[in-house]
Image (cartoon, rainbow, N blue to C red):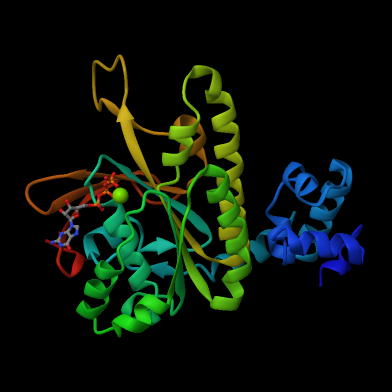
Length: 309
Ligand code: GTP
Ligand code: MG
Protein backbone atom coordinates (compact mmCIF):
# COMPACT_ATOMS: atom_id res chain seq x y z
CA UNK A 1 0.00 0.00 0.00
CA UNK A 2 1.48 3.30 -1.11
CA UNK A 3 -0.40 5.21 1.59
CA UNK A 4 1.84 3.61 4.23
CA UNK A 5 4.59 5.94 2.98
CA UNK A 6 5.22 9.23 4.75
CA UNK A 7 3.63 12.11 2.86
CA UNK A 8 1.41 9.91 0.71
CA UNK A 9 -2.31 10.39 1.17
CA UNK A 10 -5.01 8.93 -1.07
CA UNK A 11 -4.70 11.67 -3.69
CA UNK A 12 -0.91 11.46 -4.06
CA UNK A 13 -1.19 7.67 -4.03
CA UNK A 14 -3.61 7.90 -6.94
CA UNK A 15 -1.29 10.22 -8.86
CA UNK A 16 1.65 7.92 -8.17
CA UNK A 17 -0.21 4.92 -9.54
CA UNK A 18 -1.36 6.86 -12.58
CA UNK A 19 2.24 7.81 -13.35
CA UNK A 20 3.38 4.20 -13.20
CA UNK A 21 4.66 4.18 -9.60
CA UNK A 22 2.51 1.26 -8.54
CA UNK A 23 4.80 -0.29 -6.00
CA UNK A 24 7.05 0.76 -3.16
CA UNK A 25 9.96 -0.80 -5.07
CA UNK A 26 9.30 1.44 -8.09
CA UNK A 27 9.37 4.50 -5.85
CA UNK A 28 12.48 3.38 -3.98
CA UNK A 29 14.55 3.20 -7.15
CA UNK A 30 13.56 6.55 -8.63
CA UNK A 31 15.03 10.00 -8.05
CA UNK A 32 13.42 13.01 -6.38
CA UNK A 33 13.43 15.05 -9.61
CA UNK A 34 11.62 12.40 -11.57
CA UNK A 35 9.08 11.69 -8.88
CA UNK A 36 8.43 15.40 -8.31
CA UNK A 37 7.77 15.95 -12.00
CA UNK A 38 5.62 12.85 -12.39
CA UNK A 39 3.20 13.51 -9.54
CA UNK A 40 3.49 17.28 -9.39
CA UNK A 41 4.79 17.71 -5.84
CA UNK A 42 7.77 19.67 -4.54
CA UNK A 43 11.20 18.10 -4.67
CA UNK A 44 11.50 17.89 -0.89
CA UNK A 45 8.16 16.07 -0.62
CA UNK A 46 9.31 13.72 -3.36
CA UNK A 47 12.54 13.12 -1.45
CA UNK A 48 10.58 12.28 1.72
CA UNK A 49 8.40 9.82 -0.15
CA UNK A 50 11.44 8.09 -1.65
CA UNK A 51 13.24 7.94 1.69
CA UNK A 52 10.18 6.46 3.28
CA UNK A 53 9.98 3.81 0.54
CA UNK A 54 13.63 2.95 1.08
CA UNK A 55 13.02 2.71 4.81
CA UNK A 56 10.10 0.34 4.32
CA UNK A 57 12.30 -1.83 2.13
CA UNK A 58 15.14 -1.50 4.63
CA UNK A 59 17.55 0.04 2.16
CA UNK A 60 20.38 1.90 3.81
CA UNK A 61 23.03 0.92 6.31
CA UNK A 62 23.06 -2.67 7.38
CA UNK A 63 25.56 -4.78 9.22
CA UNK A 64 27.87 -7.10 7.33
CA UNK A 65 26.20 -10.28 8.56
CA UNK A 66 22.96 -9.20 6.86
CA UNK A 67 24.92 -8.44 3.75
CA UNK A 68 26.47 -11.88 3.94
CA UNK A 69 23.04 -13.49 4.26
CA UNK A 70 21.82 -11.51 1.28
CA UNK A 71 24.81 -12.47 -0.83
CA UNK A 72 24.05 -16.14 -0.16
CA UNK A 73 20.95 -15.60 -2.29
CA UNK A 74 22.94 -14.60 -5.36
CA UNK A 75 21.90 -16.79 -8.28
CA UNK A 76 23.89 -17.57 -11.41
CA UNK A 77 22.67 -18.15 -14.94
CA UNK A 78 24.75 -20.34 -17.24
CA UNK A 79 25.81 -18.87 -20.56
CA UNK A 80 25.84 -22.25 -22.30
CA UNK A 81 29.65 -22.28 -22.42
CA UNK A 82 31.56 -23.79 -19.51
CA UNK A 83 34.61 -21.75 -20.54
CA UNK A 84 32.66 -18.54 -20.29
CA UNK A 85 30.91 -19.59 -17.08
CA UNK A 86 34.19 -20.30 -15.31
CA UNK A 87 35.70 -17.04 -16.53
CA UNK A 88 32.93 -15.15 -14.71
CA UNK A 89 32.74 -17.35 -11.65
CA UNK A 90 29.91 -19.71 -12.56
CA UNK A 91 27.52 -17.68 -14.69
CA UNK A 92 25.86 -14.30 -14.85
CA UNK A 93 25.05 -13.15 -11.32
CA UNK A 94 21.91 -11.71 -9.78
CA UNK A 95 22.22 -8.63 -7.54
CA UNK A 96 24.59 -7.19 -10.13
CA UNK A 97 24.88 -5.51 -13.50
CA UNK A 98 26.90 -7.34 -16.13
CA UNK A 99 27.98 -5.32 -19.15
CA UNK A 100 28.80 -6.99 -22.44
CA UNK A 101 30.54 -4.72 -24.89
CA UNK A 102 32.15 -5.25 -28.25
CA UNK A 103 31.96 -4.48 -31.95
CA UNK A 104 29.04 -5.43 -34.21
CA UNK A 105 28.41 -9.17 -34.69
CA UNK A 106 30.59 -10.01 -31.70
CA UNK A 107 27.69 -11.90 -30.09
CA UNK A 108 26.21 -9.47 -27.56
CA UNK A 109 22.63 -9.94 -28.73
CA UNK A 110 23.10 -13.70 -29.05
CA UNK A 111 24.29 -13.90 -25.45
CA UNK A 112 21.29 -11.84 -24.36
CA UNK A 113 18.93 -14.25 -26.14
CA UNK A 114 20.73 -17.25 -24.69
CA UNK A 115 20.49 -16.01 -21.10
CA UNK A 116 16.79 -15.22 -21.58
CA UNK A 117 16.29 -18.89 -22.36
CA UNK A 118 18.66 -20.38 -19.79
CA UNK A 119 17.31 -18.31 -16.90
CA UNK A 120 14.19 -20.46 -17.28
CA UNK A 121 15.99 -23.73 -16.59
CA UNK A 122 15.91 -25.30 -13.14
CA UNK A 123 18.91 -24.69 -10.89
CA UNK A 124 20.48 -28.08 -11.52
CA UNK A 125 20.65 -27.23 -15.23
CA UNK A 126 22.16 -23.81 -14.67
CA UNK A 127 19.06 -21.63 -14.57
CA UNK A 128 17.05 -19.83 -11.93
CA UNK A 129 13.59 -21.14 -12.71
CA UNK A 130 12.58 -17.61 -13.57
CA UNK A 131 11.49 -15.38 -16.40
CA UNK A 132 13.27 -12.70 -18.40
CA UNK A 133 12.43 -9.15 -19.35
CA UNK A 134 13.99 -7.96 -22.57
CA UNK A 135 14.21 -4.27 -23.37
CA UNK A 136 15.07 -4.10 -27.04
CA UNK A 137 16.50 -0.75 -28.05
CA UNK A 138 17.74 -1.73 -31.49
CA UNK A 139 14.92 -3.90 -32.81
CA UNK A 140 17.06 -7.02 -32.91
CA UNK A 141 15.10 -9.33 -30.59
CA UNK A 142 14.08 -12.45 -32.54
CA UNK A 143 11.49 -14.88 -31.11
CA UNK A 144 12.56 -17.39 -33.80
CA UNK A 145 16.00 -17.52 -32.23
CA UNK A 146 14.46 -18.16 -28.81
CA UNK A 147 12.55 -21.11 -30.29
CA UNK A 148 15.80 -22.57 -31.67
CA UNK A 149 17.67 -22.12 -28.41
CA UNK A 150 14.84 -23.51 -26.28
CA UNK A 151 14.32 -26.56 -28.48
CA UNK A 152 18.03 -27.33 -28.22
CA UNK A 153 17.68 -27.93 -24.48
CA UNK A 154 14.23 -29.54 -24.57
CA UNK A 155 12.37 -26.54 -23.25
CA UNK A 156 8.89 -26.19 -24.71
CA UNK A 157 9.44 -23.33 -27.19
CA UNK A 158 5.94 -21.95 -26.64
CA UNK A 159 6.50 -21.80 -22.89
CA UNK A 160 9.96 -20.33 -23.39
CA UNK A 161 8.45 -17.47 -25.42
CA UNK A 162 5.74 -16.90 -22.83
CA UNK A 163 8.43 -16.56 -20.17
CA UNK A 164 10.08 -13.61 -21.88
CA UNK A 165 8.51 -10.19 -21.47
CA UNK A 166 9.59 -7.91 -24.29
CA UNK A 167 9.40 -4.22 -24.93
CA UNK A 168 10.81 -2.17 -27.74
CA UNK A 169 12.25 1.10 -26.40
CA UNK A 170 11.88 3.94 -28.88
CA UNK A 171 14.05 6.57 -27.19
CA UNK A 172 16.10 7.02 -24.06
CA UNK A 173 13.21 8.39 -21.97
CA UNK A 174 11.05 5.48 -22.99
CA UNK A 175 13.89 3.11 -22.16
CA UNK A 176 14.16 4.55 -18.66
CA UNK A 177 10.41 4.46 -18.15
CA UNK A 178 10.32 0.80 -19.16
CA UNK A 179 12.92 0.01 -16.50
CA UNK A 180 10.86 1.75 -13.91
CA UNK A 181 7.78 -0.19 -14.96
CA UNK A 182 9.82 -3.38 -14.96
CA UNK A 183 10.23 -3.16 -11.23
CA UNK A 184 6.50 -3.87 -10.87
CA UNK A 185 6.60 -7.02 -12.93
CA UNK A 186 9.57 -8.53 -11.14
CA UNK A 187 7.84 -10.14 -8.17
CA UNK A 188 4.55 -10.77 -9.89
CA UNK A 189 6.17 -12.59 -12.80
CA UNK A 190 9.20 -14.03 -11.01
CA UNK A 191 11.63 -12.23 -13.28
CA UNK A 192 15.23 -13.21 -12.70
CA UNK A 193 16.88 -11.46 -15.64
CA UNK A 194 16.55 -8.01 -17.15
CA UNK A 195 18.24 -7.41 -20.51
CA UNK A 196 18.84 -4.02 -22.07
CA UNK A 197 20.17 -4.35 -25.61
CA UNK A 198 21.79 -1.90 -26.04
CA UNK A 199 21.97 0.52 -23.14
CA UNK A 200 23.71 3.32 -25.06
CA UNK A 201 22.30 3.34 -28.61
CA UNK A 202 19.49 5.83 -27.95
CA UNK A 203 21.65 8.02 -25.75
CA UNK A 204 24.31 8.09 -28.40
CA UNK A 205 21.86 9.04 -31.14
CA UNK A 206 20.04 11.69 -29.13
CA UNK A 207 22.88 13.49 -27.41
CA UNK A 208 25.22 14.50 -30.16
CA UNK A 209 28.24 16.74 -29.83
CA UNK A 210 30.41 17.90 -27.00
CA UNK A 211 27.94 20.34 -25.49
CA UNK A 212 25.44 17.52 -24.94
CA UNK A 213 27.95 15.14 -23.42
CA UNK A 214 27.55 16.19 -19.80
CA UNK A 215 23.76 15.86 -19.97
CA UNK A 216 24.01 12.51 -21.64
CA UNK A 217 26.37 11.18 -19.00
CA UNK A 218 24.19 12.50 -16.21
CA UNK A 219 21.14 10.76 -17.56
CA UNK A 220 22.98 7.55 -18.29
CA UNK A 221 24.32 7.63 -14.78
CA UNK A 222 20.81 7.94 -13.37
CA UNK A 223 19.64 5.08 -15.57
CA UNK A 224 22.46 2.81 -14.44
CA UNK A 225 21.93 3.57 -10.79
CA UNK A 226 18.27 2.75 -11.09
CA UNK A 227 19.22 -0.58 -12.66
CA UNK A 228 21.76 -1.17 -9.94
CA UNK A 229 19.15 -0.66 -7.24
CA UNK A 230 16.68 -2.91 -9.03
CA UNK A 231 19.29 -5.69 -9.30
CA UNK A 232 20.13 -5.31 -5.65
CA UNK A 233 16.66 -5.00 -4.13
CA UNK A 234 14.96 -7.57 -6.31
CA UNK A 235 17.76 -10.13 -6.59
CA UNK A 236 17.71 -10.16 -10.39
CA UNK A 237 20.52 -10.26 -12.92
CA UNK A 238 20.80 -7.20 -15.15
CA UNK A 239 22.57 -7.68 -18.47
CA UNK A 240 23.37 -4.60 -20.50
CA UNK A 241 25.04 -4.56 -23.89
CA UNK A 242 27.12 -1.77 -25.30
CA UNK A 243 28.76 -1.01 -28.63
CA UNK A 244 32.33 0.13 -28.91
CA UNK A 245 33.37 3.18 -30.85
CA UNK A 246 36.63 4.23 -32.43
CA UNK A 247 38.91 5.99 -30.01
CA UNK A 248 40.64 8.91 -31.66
CA UNK A 249 44.38 9.41 -31.10
CA UNK A 250 45.19 5.85 -30.10
CA UNK A 251 48.72 4.81 -30.91
CA UNK A 252 49.04 1.69 -28.78
CA UNK A 253 46.67 -1.06 -27.79
CA UNK A 254 42.98 -1.33 -28.58
CA UNK A 255 41.74 1.46 -30.86
CA UNK A 256 38.15 1.14 -29.60
CA UNK A 257 36.40 1.92 -26.36
CA UNK A 258 32.91 1.27 -25.01
CA UNK A 259 30.32 4.01 -25.53
CA UNK A 260 29.45 5.88 -22.38
CA UNK A 261 32.98 6.33 -21.13
CA UNK A 262 33.68 6.52 -17.45
CA UNK A 263 30.05 6.50 -16.27
CA UNK A 264 29.50 3.10 -17.71
CA UNK A 265 32.90 1.87 -16.61
CA UNK A 266 32.15 2.40 -12.93
CA UNK A 267 28.67 1.06 -12.41
CA UNK A 268 28.58 -2.48 -13.85
CA UNK A 269 30.14 -5.03 -11.50
CA UNK A 270 31.33 -7.26 -14.31
CA UNK A 271 32.41 -6.12 -17.76
CA UNK A 272 32.91 -8.51 -20.63
CA UNK A 273 34.60 -7.56 -23.86
CA UNK A 274 33.59 -9.76 -26.80
CA UNK A 275 35.43 -9.95 -30.06
CA UNK A 276 35.23 -12.06 -33.18
CA UNK A 277 37.72 -14.79 -33.93
CA UNK A 278 37.87 -17.40 -36.73
CA UNK A 279 34.48 -18.57 -38.04
CA UNK A 280 31.91 -18.88 -35.29
CA UNK A 281 34.48 -18.45 -32.53
CA UNK A 282 34.27 -15.56 -30.14
CA UNK A 283 36.73 -14.43 -27.50
CA UNK A 284 35.45 -13.01 -24.28
CA UNK A 285 37.72 -10.98 -22.06
CA UNK A 286 36.81 -10.32 -18.45
CA UNK A 287 37.78 -6.69 -18.07
CA UNK A 288 36.53 -5.86 -14.65
CA UNK A 289 35.31 -8.07 -11.87
CA UNK A 290 35.14 -7.47 -8.15
CA UNK A 291 36.59 -10.84 -7.29
CA UNK A 292 37.60 -12.86 -10.38
CA UNK A 293 41.00 -12.49 -12.03
CA UNK A 294 41.10 -10.94 -15.49
CA UNK A 295 41.27 -13.48 -18.26
CA UNK A 296 39.84 -14.75 -21.54
CA UNK A 297 37.54 -17.53 -22.67
CA UNK A 298 36.67 -18.84 -26.11
CA UNK A 299 33.12 -19.85 -27.04
CA UNK A 300 31.21 -20.48 -30.26
CA UNK A 301 27.83 -19.38 -31.59
CA UNK A 302 26.00 -22.33 -33.16
CA UNK A 303 22.47 -22.92 -34.39
CA UNK A 304 21.69 -24.22 -30.88
CA UNK A 305 23.12 -21.14 -29.20
CA UNK A 306 26.23 -20.38 -27.19
CA UNK A 307 28.46 -23.39 -26.58
CA UNK A 308 32.05 -24.43 -25.94
CA UNK A 309 34.19 -24.96 -29.05
P1 GTP B 1 25.56 -5.53 -32.94
O1 GTP B 1 24.25 -5.51 -32.24
O2 GTP B 1 25.45 -5.30 -34.40
O3 GTP B 1 26.56 -4.61 -32.31
O4 GTP B 1 26.20 -7.00 -32.82
P2 GTP B 1 26.05 -8.09 -31.67
O5 GTP B 1 27.31 -8.11 -30.88
O6 GTP B 1 24.79 -7.96 -30.94
O7 GTP B 1 26.07 -9.42 -32.55
P3 GTP B 1 25.01 -10.60 -32.52
O8 GTP B 1 24.86 -11.13 -31.15
O9 GTP B 1 23.79 -10.19 -33.24
O10 GTP B 1 25.82 -11.69 -33.34
C1 GTP B 1 25.55 -11.94 -34.66
C2 GTP B 1 26.32 -13.18 -35.04
O11 GTP B 1 25.82 -14.31 -34.33
C3 GTP B 1 26.12 -13.53 -36.50
O12 GTP B 1 27.09 -12.89 -37.28
C4 GTP B 1 26.31 -15.03 -36.49
O13 GTP B 1 27.68 -15.31 -36.52
C5 GTP B 1 25.81 -15.44 -35.15
N1 GTP B 1 24.43 -15.95 -35.24
C6 GTP B 1 23.29 -15.27 -35.10
N2 GTP B 1 22.21 -16.04 -35.28
C7 GTP B 1 22.69 -17.26 -35.54
C8 GTP B 1 22.08 -18.53 -35.83
O14 GTP B 1 20.87 -18.65 -35.88
N3 GTP B 1 22.90 -19.57 -36.05
C9 GTP B 1 24.25 -19.46 -36.00
N4 GTP B 1 24.99 -20.53 -36.23
N5 GTP B 1 24.85 -18.28 -35.74
C10 GTP B 1 24.10 -17.21 -35.51
MG1 MG C 1 23.19 -6.64 -31.10
